[in-house]
Length: 124
Image (cartoon, rainbow, N blue to C red; front, top):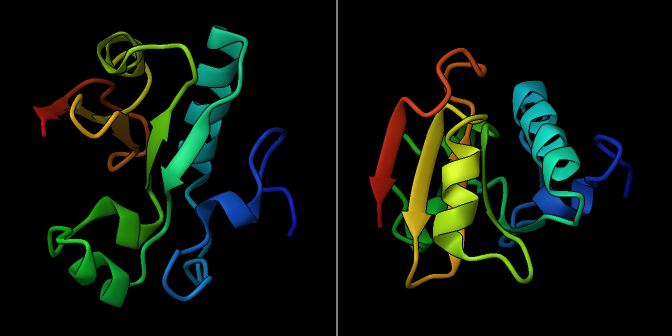
């Protein structure tokens, strides 16, 4: 599959249920934020969940207005980095940051196009 940015490919964001991407693509603000984070960390970022079609979002218990369905969110982790440490850095870049210590990942989104870093935060 094609690259969406320097370090992230379509296959990383494709829905795990149907293999599709949103018809309007993955948010450029999200990709920019992920590239900024990767540059800051100097190591790979892994995407455990990118785009979700509405059926997949329902199946995994996602909220009805999930940013994943809109192509503006990703659940990420970084090998060798704790969830809390990663989340604290993400709050400086992404509008929405969910900290999921038990799940071992951080939800990041650009629901406001990157205009309000760290404004929407929660723990899951």
